[in-house]
Length: 128
Length: 364
Figure 1 (cartoon, each protein chain N blue to C red):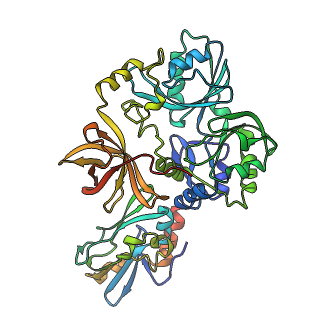
Figure 2 (tube, each protein chain N blue to C red; figure 1 turned 135 degrees about the vertical axis):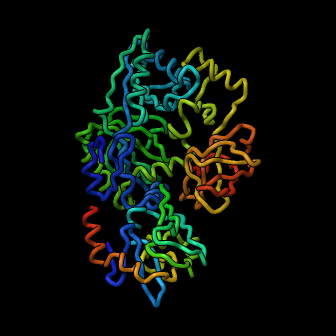
């Protein structure tokens, strides 16, 4: 399972990349593997105000509907429209081209609640 | 996870199967991925463990009469070595199960039933055997089954046997075939819409048979294939799944299976009720849908037209071969017209769809 060291993680298997007050969000390699082939993604609308724990995106695999949640609060300033035509990017490149949304961080303190790569890896081994 | 294991459980783990609980059984939903496995069956070959299916034998002078009364299809002109698909109904025309009848001889038949219905079917058959000179035996736990499906299935199986398996006609079987040194029964049947075989064997032989078929099919590009693609494959071919397109509430006529319901048979469970359904005109029908808007229709989602709910989806998912999202739905007969535009409610939002002809996919 790939767990890039420079990212932060949620207990719901989302990843967060912090860049100049902005947070890029996606789902982890573990999450995409659990889902199987992703066939449909609904990304949030730009300008949506979102709270930590709110649903961010609906991700559908062949057999099931799943929700990805936003680990932090803020405003959606970008959404990955490419996922409409190529939902499989989430499987192929979950930390790169499979990004879901960019959020303008409302409260930097919330980042402290997230897990480091090491802590996320520990979580995965406990879930196994 | 709780459930019964088939003889191939360890084999599934070895091949990277993702095990799920399905109708009381532990089986792989996928190995490498549902879409890849689905495409392999359509273009090359896939190997399924279907050992969870039920196998019930009917033997005796009254075996034919018993079965003829039990099922809706006509078994009268069957040859030895032939197989017939049939629904099996309650007296009110609702469906108990759909099944395959294998004729071994005038006095010996094998009935293969859905895994989820084994106990129910067995009890129903025992109840209905009263008055017939037939002995029933449930051999489900002593029978393993593999399904080798795809255009290259014939080439692969032919490597493992001297028997003329390539010559087995569709919906026929050879009762005793040595495959990779194991005694099997091989039938030219399947639930995928592709050419292929269902291979019945002793549970103790299943794992070795699996390995032999996988090895024989390596150059053809065979893949181990799970429940996930088994469903998408049968769905694209519009084959019914009991509990979805057939049920105690959905008769075979409503499901569009009228050609397997012989209303001119002398007698069978449900005959009068089904005749009445036909005479009155069916109130509901299972139709095929193509989702034209953006979204995936899934089982249970409401189908709407003219501002009201006119039915619901029985099976819905992406159809990998077609690259579209399709659905089967039980609809009020008044709306059951090919070409009619309707909507499916997907998590609160109406997504456009249109009624299309079945099957969605046909091989060749």
